[in-house]
Length: 278
Image (cartoon, rainbow, N blue to C red):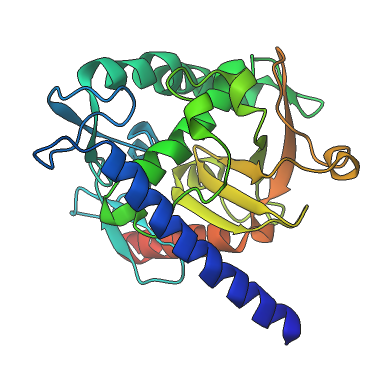
């Protein structure tokens, strides 16, 4: 009971810090007229409706018959219709939007098409350099967004984010955070590979199981992406396959039943599909 109470108090404190941090950050990017400037470069150019989770993650999601939209379940809520435009918010000018598309989102989409076929002895033979930037950029965009989709998410860490902006170099990011990727599988052989790849889990946070800090996570395309803050202590780092500036990516093969949020998402989505077709 005391552990639960401590967890609750910790959650309340960090939540208050989250809201304060987001508020101060967004205020710093408003011009004198109250209009938002680009959150990356500060330009007062017209802003694009930007995604945090790339819309390609939603394309493979299980469709509800006749709805033309996607199914997404999270945090114990009832079923929610989800379109490819879900979560968009005016965040970035055109130049900065292109920066993320060219350097991270499009690159990851290209690699992800074959990423499951490249797994060999728990490693993927692609560079982890841009993937570190991709994962952090998803969390950062969700942190900056005022979309209702991300209203309960923010980065509450006391690192100097300005040292990471605007270039999002992996060497800078890795000074403050650790990262890991899990390839999701079904040990019970109930769900197909396509079923698992159809699931979308938006950025969330929880108390880390590996240290006394926070684990941020999101999932899609059959993969679970995690970011740990602060960095893991040395003894823990030896037990977790962490990303670094290397030409290969270490991955863990994780049974999705071990991740409650993902179990809930997949189970609800597949049940809805069977009901619709059955």
